[in-house]
Length: 501
Image (cartoon, rainbow, N blue to C red):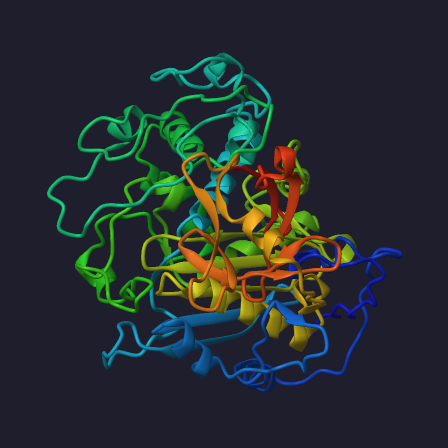
């Protein structure tokens, strides 16, 4: 068993669980050997030791039971898997494939992985670049021949910018199609925003390289690029370039699923806990959101990147390419496909996913060969995934995701009233952050991505929650004592987003 991370003593105010390693003082984190225990003991420790990402100062650390938190969050089923030393350490399945049903979730159960699709797709793009089929830094026009990306400045867009969400391409996300839809859009209609596609056309909406702006549309451009280079459908390209060679035999971009695959799939559930009509939605926007997979398959992908980074032979990517994948790109600090976080030996790469009815989290540490995958079949599954991550951090000593303690203070009512309002996210132009107050008890809350969380005020003037690890910082007070005009949102993963009223 490989060595694990000790938990450091932070000497700076830690803003979120994901920043525990980023903002701590001192030398880079080093690995330390700890006594080995069995995988069964570790899995048991997690099942009775979930933690909120943040706890209030003075309160005891509350360890929560996984099954109780599943019920609390309305998550009927999930799978948790852990790697250690580049090998599967353990995998456990919990609950049912459908609320009130009698079919248990199993390790082989399929889940929609949402935007984790982007990270997996990036491997196929980087393989093509490694083989000399394309230049990541050259204009996209040099690689595409059958289609042209529209919009001002499109001739300056590069493949690397598309991978890192800095190309200025619109369409942040896709909402999928009902299970009973008669016709799914093909790639051409998705890119063009034409019927039967129900999403806008993919175009450049801001200057390439100017800012970080999350873009599912950008990954549809990459899907087009892969299909042109291979002369084959995306599903076939990914099967031959990634899934087959890695042994990811339970992963597919097929929509709709074949009957045999559908029999293994978990049913998606909305925020009320009700099963989705038709069991799930279809996502023909494959590279952006269309992946069906298992936890073990995703860990297989993560391990392959870890081993490539270390220069071990037989990987799908070479050492230099793997290192470029997990190197922060500017602006934004994203990798060439994965999200990035942590520092030193606690540096990680990964991705979250959020399709209708499903939430997923896949994380791999760059140096230690450790990591985790959480797959859930509920719109409320991300809060539970955060608690699982904090619980695993306790089991394995991962400082990056360790629960942090924050102090809450009372503030004047006008402070809250000045914060109340709706803010447009710069990185997600179609989405908003709403801050409000409950009419009954006057408690403040923030709502983003369909979830609402209680807000607390901190001594440093920021505002935070306990379940999602959000931190709000006022970046532009209102003129003449009016309401706040702009805020900075710090996410659980350590990403900063600007938002204006």
